[in-house]
Length: 137
Image 1 (cartoon, helix red, strand yellow):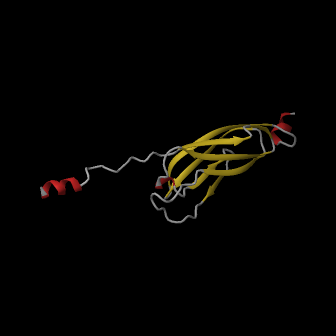
Image 2 (cartoon, helix red, strand yellow):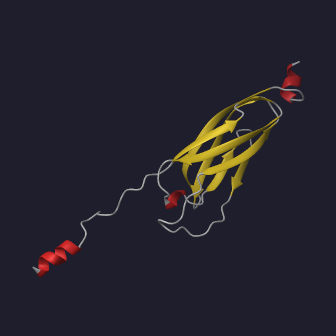
Image 3 (cartoon, one colour):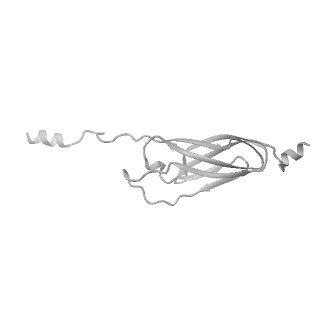
């Protein structure tokens, strides 16, 4: 009887170890089509999934596809499982001076390693003052 009680007290392997789901990353720009010069707002958003530590306090690297990049480094409190909520929305603005089709990429990194990225297409047409427009005339 004592042995049976002891066996019941030991949890089965994997019991209570619910597999956490990772959030999905989406990236959008506003506007997606514009005339140069233009300032574009980009929003990266994590949706669904659980508040997993891997996604907590990431470093963000923005590749603007115009030869420049930006990095946003985090400064966060330590992660506490079950209590800490991950940030799910990140934004940045970038100025485009020249007409082109751009593929902007955001990468989320932790400890220097990229763990998720996403891209969005942006079309910039020549506007007044764009060197691309002036060279076409």
